[in-house]
Length: 220
Image (cartoon, rainbow, N blue to C red; front, side):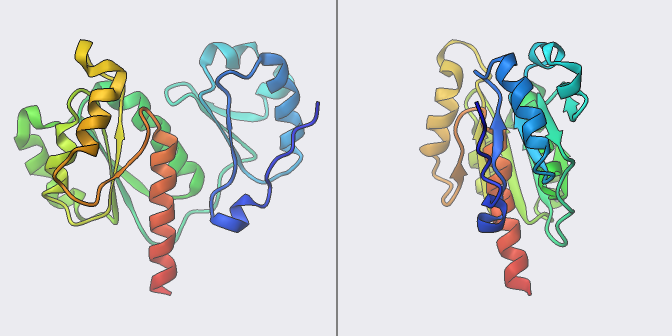
């Protein structure tokens, strides 16, 4: 079995193809990783569970820059830093960090500078109020939130910057694995918020990258 990597995608749209590892067998990954390394361009692997990573052949695992917390890996390094533009990564709670770390690692991979603002949900509104000016100094704001995702609507009324929302599967019972957060964001009265799928930190980072690159293009 050979793997056809879309090596021209970065040149077309400014985003490379990523390898979604969930559902892929150890055997497939052991063949895929060395083969893809020959392309020499940076490649991101997502949803690579730590148990699966440790079962890889040493010849494959040694090619990867693996991060346990985000379950991501870099193959052939990362892209050069983008000149201009910063992203604020905001989480409602620390339980949202697994998604936020996937998001942050993707930003690192794409060369997008960012700052993190963790655990500033609206249950203690002063935490957000203390950081809002700093958050608004960034070019794009990504909000990662589960449960009722109330922080998304609040930020949507306080920030003039492009907002990308990533609902998470955090929460009890009626949170329904992130469906309540997703529906709350989709129903928000704060206009113009972009919404990703549940737990899709990778997608949130890619959305921010598109905005940042467009801003830089317009500046030049």
